[in-house]
Length: 222
Image (cartoon, rainbow, N blue to C red; front, side, top):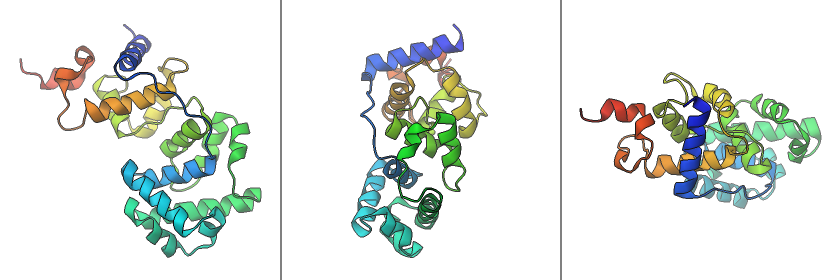
């Protein structure tokens, strides 16, 4: 079984377990980007609370852009790394207004995926994962965001080398994912990582992939 066949098998098995997640449709691209910046190194619950608080304090992106960075930081403190994230958001908004004349990213829909990724990743605080999440969730693009769950599982199942970085994984994993499966495979790997293949005590007895798993091979009793 080659790597593409193994990836297809894993994708199909996860869909049998969890169903086939469907992309919910286009979202406001700028709002999705800012939500994704807030989500860095925090939980979905904290991200949602931080985003709601940000919009409560500053109803428009123009308000955020013009606000003092400390005020923005205070409004999103629940997400952690408040100063860093507030600075990233404000700097991006200022660049966007200066470069395009309005605070909208809807033009991204008209860009090639590679160009859109490059445009977003040129900004400090916006890496390949944040850019990929934005293009996947807001635009429905065939990109594959790699979070900590996906990186861990991909290494355990030998889809990528053990020393592969997250940035490198963003380049390597899309090459082996079945066409059209980027979004459902991304979502199902996260479900699988949260429910079964967690970091410290994976539930190997519930896992259908033990014959492919380096972790299981190394940690199972002889």
